[in-house]
Length: 124
Image (cartoon, rainbow, N blue to C red; front, side, top):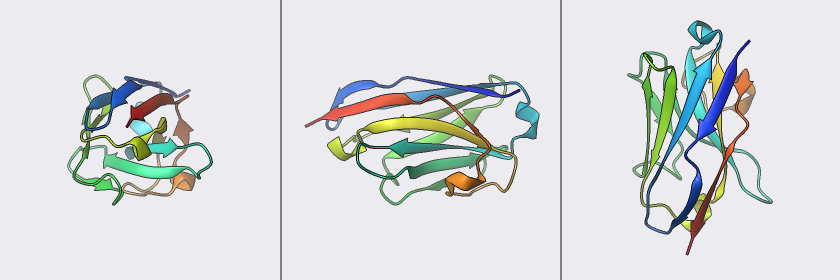
């Protein structure tokens, strides 16, 4: 059984920063990659970033590239999303996901496990 638990969301002013964490437990050895997705009101789920198990390979959506950084600490089974220069359009529920399939994918269909989400609200 796999469990992903996100934390670190909150309310921040535009231009500010937040760091999200995703703690994984269970069959984490089966993961090839982990990622972050987000869902804003009235919009479809959107890919944000992904990182492979080694931590050497990362992929970002164009909308967050240069502002967000994904990283991981395998000793803690935790993945992070450092979000800088936040904009009101970054407001969304952010979900952590893990996949035992191909690493580097931005498609939600490739991810097997999902967390419950954490709300990020950026005020203008």
